[in-house]
Image 1 (cartoon, rainbow, N blue to C red):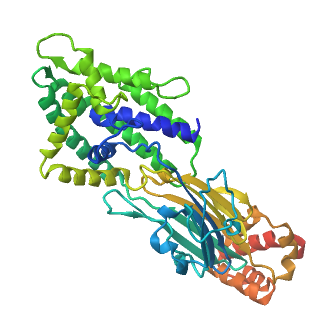
Image 2 (cartoon, rainbow, N blue to C red):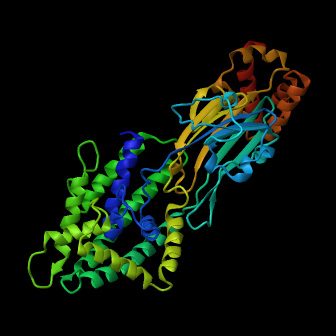
Image 3 (cartoon, helix red, strand yellow):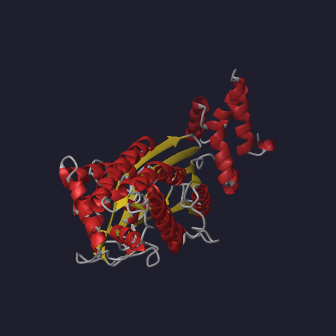
Length: 491
């Protein structure tokens, strides 16, 4: 299953989980129009991606030099670029161009024709002495403005004597923790059920008894919501430090199918794993049918079921019937009746949203970063484009809940002044470089000896160490290294 199709299915699957909080899950249907307070309450639990929002494409091309200096070029939406980052003083060159999707543009940013202004996408590039000096070209606030997502970088350059090791990690940050996620989720359910119970009692109590419905929401429904959203969180954490992998999505889809069946929600998915909207509506109708009773003892009328679905927005209808209008009106009054009124509820909801969805739980950003390393890349969680070049392509939602990291490690051969290693340099490859690194990286004495070899232009210091050291482990490592670097008959 493709990433796009799963994201679409996942958004509906999470909405099924929201049946545990009944009407509030129904607000998330595509195209549903609602007041901001409704949307906040929806996002208290739902971590599915918003549909219909314009995608923003973020391109970055980076070159790391052997001295630790960094060149970076960016191309991204002007509206999503911090004001300070659009200032020419932050860059050697700036300009504007039309939108560039990943299908439209594969690089190089520096070759793009740029205008002084008037276009949707901002382009810039610069060279700085270290990773810490790169301009902050991305910043996104959480809903309650308590946390800002940025790109944070960690860089280490380590001299291993014959090799220089470069380790790069760049993380698109988010701030959600499992503990706060679970606490906020419970608080959100309690807030919603409190408002919903008041709404149903005020709007329907004379004719209908909704006690069983509220009980179902607080018990079976809430339990299902906990299990379903735990699945979302667990799989998101598992992907946080790797590129999106459709196999992960397939596993998660199967887990959701199994979970739904365990709760008796049968027949919601077809053979391909796609959730069937009509089946979900039937499930909703069934829950209402079983948990709402007429006070006069007569069978529940289909009109009430339709009105409940219409009032929530789930059915896709405008909900203009008298009962639907009464439900929506009582919902607003129930919010106003909460301590502090709608303003306090909205503030509480924003706080809950930030603790559950962080910055990237609902995201339309798409990122493609390409980076060139010194030497040969020996480890990365990206796609290896060439020996020294790596590409990462991911969505903002991949940074939920705790950030998405791009990592790379490269090794640069520094044996050029040692003539007797000429044959080794001609045949050196990634595996050989790694073997050298593994032999020397944890032994500072051996590293210092290799630095002397580099300075003197020969391997004499290494041979002397192998012959004279009283440390058996040092002797063993030195001799294994010599065997690796030069033919046995030359030693």
